[in-house]
Image 1 (cartoon, rainbow, N blue to C red):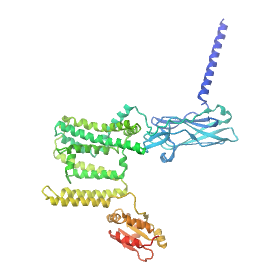
Image 2: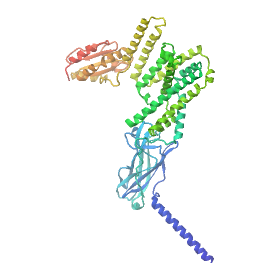
Image 3: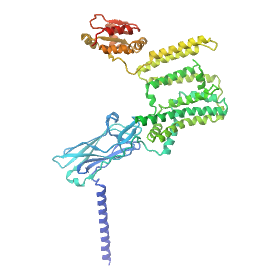
Image 4: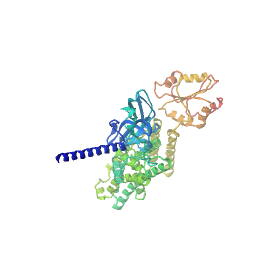
Length: 597
């Protein structure tokens, strides 16, 4: 009986074992044979984002080859196209072996991803995906080692990692191809016009936007207007509770108005141009940066008491009319503008999430950033008891106001330093002209000055500022004349070929040279004649003492200084020279007398 029981028990175990083996075999056949693949090798990692790969022999239909299986998080991505990849480092995969000839790597369809580093939608491979490299021919050996080189660059929503190149190795036995893994290059889901980015729950993302807005108030970019805001709050402490709250809400309205403009611009860019708005994009525009720096200079001069007009009175909240409310809205708008260059992790994440959503949801998220920035001011101005504890206005207020002027100048200089050199120099000169003009406006007249005298002085001040803008501010980005650097051999060869030559000796520190540039070489008719007559235009820079043009000016042309313009006309032994600043008509006549090329 015991023997029978033991036999029965043994049969049951054998049956269960066979079922288990059959189940495993069926599962293997269903899921594919990964036993021939290498272990997963980590390619890249940044904080919680990572990507790994493993390789092995595989099939796509009837074709045999090697498959690379990528596994990782969805926010870390590789670039699919060379033209959109940073530095051209798109994902490249190549297989090499002594026993096989391989074809080009075959990828599935890419995903559309909003790239914060480029501010546009780009094609990427992210998360889990497969790449197949077909075997074109088998050499003498049916079994051989295979090296797969993977190179490119990977980025997350906020940062790009260092370009990489890694080699993975596997052994391929062609005789067992019927057991190789079947791989399908399934297309990744395309996202369409809306960019894909880091996924956050809606409530969490809105909370993130709120926190990002609050933290904007402590960013260095907002510091220039914070002292002015403090002054406004001190002044508001004198008002009744209703007016104090109303002024504070107007300031908050100005902040929200700016973020509403950002949301509107984002809608237009996505619907019309198929791109997105980058945070602080306006500060990448040299004209905008120049304008903001000049505005800060003007505000600093107002703080110094150089001039005083009705509009700044509304800005400081001293007007009892509705202009005080208008000034509050304007100051809130300005504070929000100055906050935009301060892009940091939490703000970049909130703004990128907003742009990746549908337009309505994304616009609301952008507005929540503005709400976050406005909350501290709304709370402060709604608490009159706290405002009453602030010190009363007195001499300290005037000293504080003047100290603010130096802070504003410091920020203005920092903005100017970010401009291209040729624009930076002009803005610095123009700042002096603005300062002198505003000094005339406010300092040369008084309350008792006759109206006719006031009009005369202030008209002269305005004309002076306009003239300074004409002289020092560039009229266009591109020069009308194709200037060549100073080269004695180039000049000698042109004269030998009977080609007319014009040499403009100039220097960056030369004020008169800039006047010549505006009054002579910025004229389209002169630029057209230089091109039409095939004149070799040479810009001889004498800014430094060891420049070739500086040495030639002294030793070859025997000129004491700049500006000097020298023209060689074919058929004339003597050159023509102009040492002044008003010679445009004379130069034009000379150019017209030269025969066409």
